[in-house]
Amino acid sequence: MALPSISINLPDDELIRRAPVSEGRKQRLFENYLRERALIRTTEMLFARVDARDMQRLPATGSVRDFGFKAIMFKHSFVEDVDWLIVSAQGWAVGQEDFLLKYFGESLRDDSDRRLGVDVDRDVAAILDALEKMADELRGLGFQASAFVVTGSLGQPLYEALQRASPRILNPWDWYRQRNIQADRAIHRFIGVHAGIPLVAIEAVRTPMLFAVDLARFATLTRYGVGPNFDPEFSVEAFTDETARKVLARQPNLILDPPPESGLDEERIRQLQLRVGLELWETYKLDVKDPDAVIARPLADPVYE
Image 1 (spheres, rainbow, N blue to C red):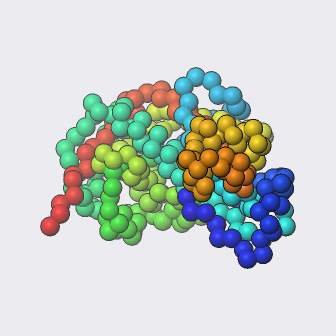
Image 2: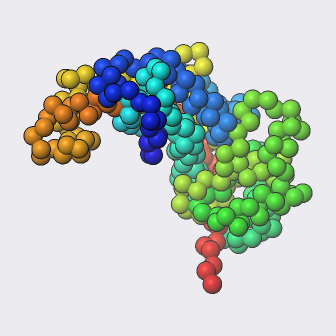
Image 3: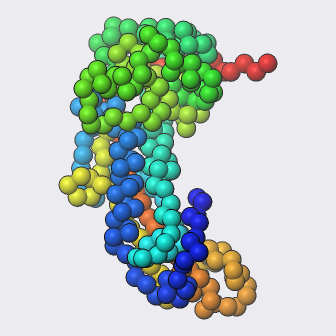
């Protein structure tokens, strides 16, 4: 992750090292992350629209999936009155949603192996025709398709061609406006709406496949969080002398100037104390209820000329 650029007006490093972590700076970064995250909660949008999303407070029970990261960041971003550019939270939010989409896509793939058909050509009309037939097949089995999913790499030309395939594909924003949807208006990996059913792309699942799924019958998605809004777990902590010494003993290469073999242990501790430890975790559980509620078709491999 790229680190922010430093201002020429930075105070002395020793002042930064001794300064407390600003609760206001922490809160502003977290609020920025939550705003970015709300714009791209595509997986939750899909489940929420069919009343198959649940919210629970931590701690979670049973088998869950945690998405998140630990990072060492310069402390300047979290000290009051320091002119320092805080890193954008958008990249973090995108990464978290891609992890969740992968979790969802892997579940579709693993629960649909016995319902495969012939390969579908990498052509807009062929893909849309196949999705319609898959929805019809689900309907014949007593299900109602509520999401279409394509996994694997589509390639930018095919992805954009699907987005532009009007009138068969409706733009996500037009769909939200037509339905007067004000909340959960995520568009991340959301290609568009076909035959009234959202179509999303999950490139993180490498197997090229098409899926039609009745989400309400297939599974329940539960988000576990903190507080009234079920927020993710978030912390920013400074390093005391003791914690810095323990961290460097476990991970000596966190500080390379001076290097671990230099013997300058106190300076290495001081350098680590010019940074903070940041953690951000989201917790979800996907409870599959009926694997028969999903149908899959292989997507033909790309042809390279």
